[in-house]
Length: 243
Ligand SMILES: Nc1ncnc2c1ncn2[C@@H]1O[C@H](COP(=O)(O)OP(=O)(O)OP(=O)(O)O)[C@@H](O)[C@H]1O
Image 1 (spheres, rainbow, N blue to C red):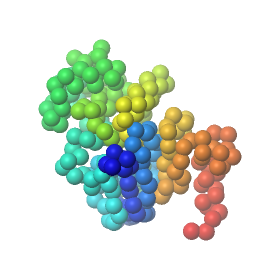
Image 2 (cartoon, protein in one colour):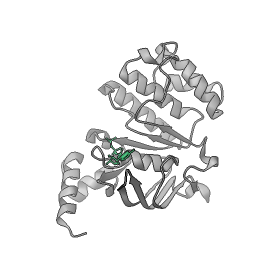
Image 3 (cartoon, rainbow, N blue to C red):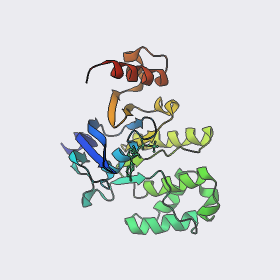
Image 4 (cartoon, helix red, strand yellow):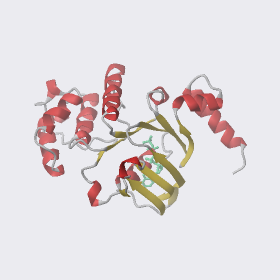
């Protein structure tokens, strides 16, 4: 049955950027309806993985299947939402104007504009030009674009960067609500305290998946008191084992 297949299936993914291999044969599955964290230090390849998932990354080899189709297929256009790390919204347009514009490009229903503005908590700023928003408001406007059309899979590249703890909490609550409706979310972060909020973690380092499991499992497996320490222990174990 289609719906029992994973939301994402990646096999032996290799990517070369700027003449260097930056992903070295990644394989992982992402089950549907979960909030999955893609965690790892800056430069480890999180954005490259996300680009491959949404089909904008040239890959050297391997396969990337999303919602049962090859990543980047036409049929996935309105089923996958992507929020890039650098906001893609236009500074000279208001929040509402941006969303109306992107809704028409994506073919999302008209009423969606108001829904997503509410969801990201920007109702009070809907008529403000994006260039005048604070950093956190700006990234929320960017996130709102990814929510248009109610996609089945959301790929969010560091959506909480620059947000204060209250807003971060609110956004994670929104992610949880969306997952409750069956949406699959892949959220990258390099902040370990966010990792604990996920159902499942993909820990990356230097273009490889270091560990893949529920946060509690990773803590148990390493005997670490928290995820930061678990990550460090996993790195130490990998460094000590022959490859
Ligand atoms: N356009 C590019 N040309 C060449 N190399 C690139 C390019 N973009 C990224 N890279 C390299 O690919 C590797 C992975 O980068 P990527 O942006 O995927 O990492 P990341 O984990 O998302 O980092 P961050 O958390 O800092 O955003 C890095 O070594 C980076 O320098």
